[in-house]
View 1: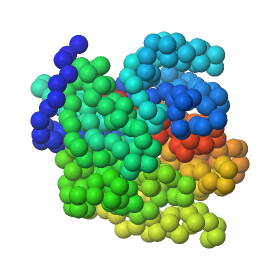
View 2: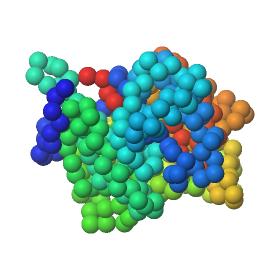
View 3: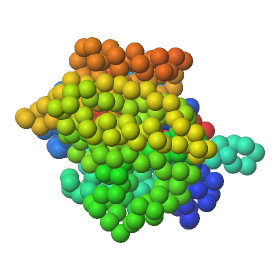
Length: 357
């Protein structure tokens, strides 16, 4: 195995960029939740089965890498997966401490480049992490995960103190990064940085050319409004978003404003995007709290799209049908995530893809 080492400068200065999620993958990463965590208070016993459904869909196509704190937890998770019929041949475990399970936000950001002889090379970006603006301390173990992963894989890595979460950004593979003002301009992340400096950081550390901004997030999203609940790229020229038809719902005005903005956005070559519009799921609550259920928290894997669903109903059927029509060469697979959304996240929030090289 190669020796992990820190690289100076930015990924862009070394020719690295963050690939689109639909690019070929070698693995999907998870940080396995534990009952002492704060994400699923009183409901942890319902979570492993739901996670097993997601892993089962992935391991049929590619590898899964699971972060657990130690060997004892590896044994526990192996037993949980076996209980729910998940084959373990493509599952690899990494012993790395974590605070919580939201790997999209605290996990490694993998960037790639063409090296000598045209061979693709992989590196890790280690952004700062403060648990969505300091809401859920402690988060020191989560903040250390990217460097620990780079060391385990023998990969070079970059470090920046700028606070970032993987769910706050989405990429089209042709130089554009999509994000929200409610997160990246929030004073609880990088209060010393102006909008222009944040745009420069996104382009330098993700290897991009243009930042596309939306506004606020949906009700119940404790991240302040991650893009992976609002709008996602389906390909370089297509963005899928959601609308809420009920004008009495607080999400109605927010999503209409974001739809208006999406219609004005242009890619790095000045071209408008094609738009696909999904319904929002039916309203879900827990102890009077609105839950951030959305079909947009999906995950691209090799040959498929895994979509969180929340019961079998007309809205779910419409969302899956529209996604399948937009992605005819992929299998669109709905996975019920009702148990997971109690933790205020779903499939995309729990995962981080590793590009193939």
